[in-house]
Amino acid sequence: MALNVTQEILKILDENNLEYDLINHAPVYTSKDAAKARGTELSQGAKSLIWKVKNEFVMTVAPAHKKVDVKKLASVFNVEDSEVSLARPKEVRQLTYCNIGSVPPFGHVFGVKVVIDPSLFENDWIAFNAGSHTSSIKMKAKDYRRLVAESKKGMTADIVLSDFEDSLLEEEKREEQS
Image 1 (spheres, helix red, strand yellow):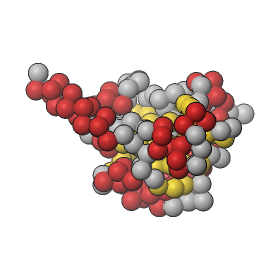
Image 2 (image 1 turned 90 degrees about the vertical axis):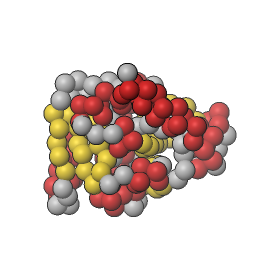
Image 3 (image 1 turned 45 degrees about the vertical axis):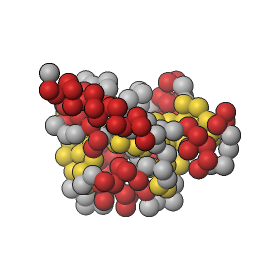
């Protein structure tokens, strides 16, 4: 039987008595569209990616306007860059029961390590897809840190490119002005 990912995440949040908003919306497939549908800033999006590091699956979580630096991720695990690659869509689906773009940032639910870029915690609130392209959860960043970053499977590390963020935010501002 497949895991109902959304229900599993909600159960974890409820069991921990955490404040959150479940947002149902039209299907979204990009971080930018998700932010619009949620009524949040792009930087509040907690973007989850599944990677293969050597032969182990690992989840990274970073603000949606930033891009993971493979070199930095490789150094976290003390491996060569060539030993780090994004998981294939089929592997993501088998591991998480989710399609790419809908994986929530709760790697411990799927039994994988989670590496979170600390810049995510510059936000008071974060938002993320909740296991589908039509539902999102918005919660306090400090609660997410306590639940995931400070768990046995979680860790924080600088894993993002710094120049990608600036170009993406500049593009977003230009679009808002036009």
